[in-house]
Image (cartoon, rainbow, N blue to C red; front, side, top):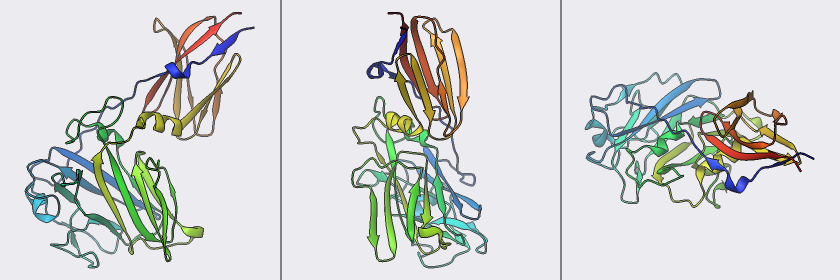
Length: 308
């Protein structure tokens, strides 16, 4: 009988970390590192905020450090959905301003993160509220954190408090204490942003405004023993085998499945979408490389077909 062995313990992980270089559109001088945060409310309106790091910024956060790089307030239409960085020196948390800060350039805080104690305020929108980002930026050489083989230099910590925040999606809790904390009629949500987005949903499908809460986002040094690529990969697919059958199930988004021999000859290439599965066809007795990848990662397994 022909059998299939998948020595998962010897699987190699080759992840794609090509990084897009982002800029703050209206800054007269670009900081060393720019991290955009893309925000969308339940009605489909979108906005973008920018977090910048530079060791030469004059302060940890707030107005004056941003002004070092020519970042000034931006005029917004307060009748439409918009997001802003809370900048107490200019506009308090409860004040509706037409001139708001869309970028926050700062240096590293004393506790090893940036920005400091600054939050994101959103107005004129409805739940659900989605925050997304490019998580390949956590591998950037411009980050003020040490390099980690097989892991990013940093991760994002996102905390949020919105009325009736009942459910989150598209995130990974790395810390064991990540989760829900009930505060009267508000759910305080805390998550380490290992994935590429967090979506806050209201309880029971109720329509709720986003203007009565806040989101805190900070970038911190990576300090988890968990290999983040393995965590991400397991969140996107699983592999199962029985005798001479191997099945890949796509859990989210789209995957590309390829099989090569050790000389690099491609035997198959297949794309599958979320909730689809694919059975690898039987091949001649040999050692092969099974490659599973998407826009975030590229993971390689050694598989062996052999005859009894």
